[in-house]
Image 1: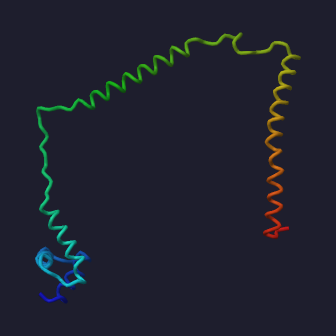
Image 2: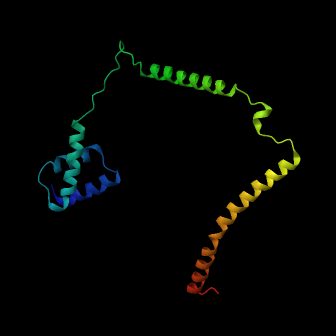
Image 3: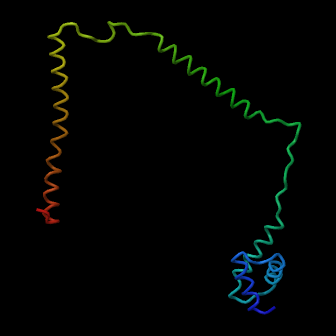
Amino acid sequence: MESGKIEKLIEKYEEGQTSLAEENILREYFKNEVPAHLSPYKLMFAFAEKQRENKMEEKAPQVGQKSYRFTWASVAAVLIIALGVFFFFQNSSSSLNQNDLGTITDEELALQKTKETLQMVSQIMNEGSADLVYLKEFNKTTNKIIKID
């Protein structure tokens, strides 16, 4: 068969415009020796032919056999949820009394503890802001390089 006709059929095949008869012509053509510029198409049609031969065997579901995998997974899930609920309510049942909350009844002592706590928080915040000096120096140097100032 002439190469020009095959090339036109290939173009139609790539566009999805070929009929079944034309596709059969292409399959038969590529079973034989082909020119070098058409060798990639030979591989493509050989692969398609091989895949057509390898049809999957459909297994019919067997009526007598049941899979208990889903059943056991459901049972395990219910047990996990039941144990979780049991332990959650067991731990939460020991309620806290007013004495366990750590409340201070003396107002002066409460004010002193609050000041100590705020002082501690202030020190931690100041330690974090001390590192910002390096960042400011870095920004100054960057601005000099970029010449923003």
